[in-house]
Length: 470
Image (tube, rainbow, N blue to C red; front, side):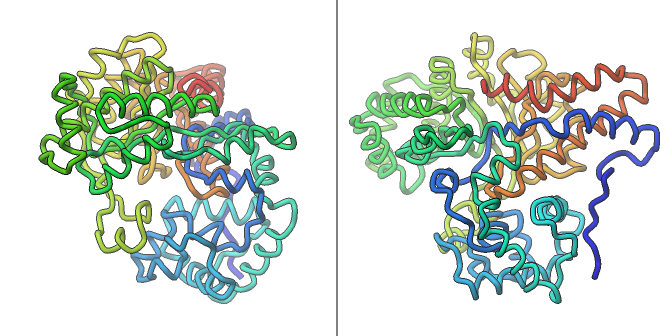
């Protein structure tokens, strides 16, 4: 039976001398705790500590990296448990797992194959390559393991060496799971919410008036006018901070931040509530509100993170049937220099203000993002995410940004995942790739070995603590 490929020197340079330096650097940080300041794991898993039921609901259904490629190869999303709201029954879960194993070759050359190989081998002790013949055997082995105490969510959290795990939460969320964890005397992990107000900043969206009302109810504040709306956002931000949040996360089509005069913003807000605002007015208000979010971050200290340049829900029928975040959000180009100038003119040098900018547009790494971070003390370069959190793309990113902004202006790795078991594999991948990059600088005599070791430890431990105020 073919074995999974899991070489101890994976991702290291092929040159023997450089590989040896990379190996030594990597081993110096291999066992450091995981800091995950941006992700999408459901906090209820840890609050309730309910055993995972099967490999499909744990490893396939929540991971849009997996489901989107299976969908591209002809597998309907409903057969994979996407959008189901609950785990598939045993028969359907087994069928989905068989499909995944049969189609293992579609993941060749992708980070999905890399992460999944590490998960199977290092978490479940499985070293056989998935295929049609062993699908049921693997399903049963993983299911049996998940029924034991060692594989419950909290046990895995500790086993993975996670020191901090940030979730992503709606401003109207009651944060019950976070309170439950905070107040549980038997829990010593750190799981913190992240304030994600996107749907409240999009006045042109169909559900925006209802969202504004829900925000008002959650904040116990009248959101019928513009000032009340801002007051509700401020109150919920305070609530999130009280539950441990350190950042606010934003993802829109662009990052234009042109402010409006308050009377103009208030008038557009009122018109948008009545569904009477034009598309241009709604866009102008959204850009103004993003500026307001920066003002609030400068006030309350929540780190502002931006994930722009994604066309959400690219396939309307899939969104209508399965909802958002189901694998068909597609990157677009982005402009940062002019778009962020109003925000940075006002807050770019403000004490305590942190702005972390992520993008899937590789063309702006060295041309816009690195120069911005190389001047403004508030700006940090977010790690490669989404379609770029892959070995070659991470290498291109590191080379593109470091020569202009250095290592200290980068965020540290973020896993940005709903796939809980992939977290250690993703962070380990990042550590290996940074070790490889630094080793190359050492053998080219651009860095001393002690400088490379200090830098790698900073990338793993110091940068994320500083940038995300952990």
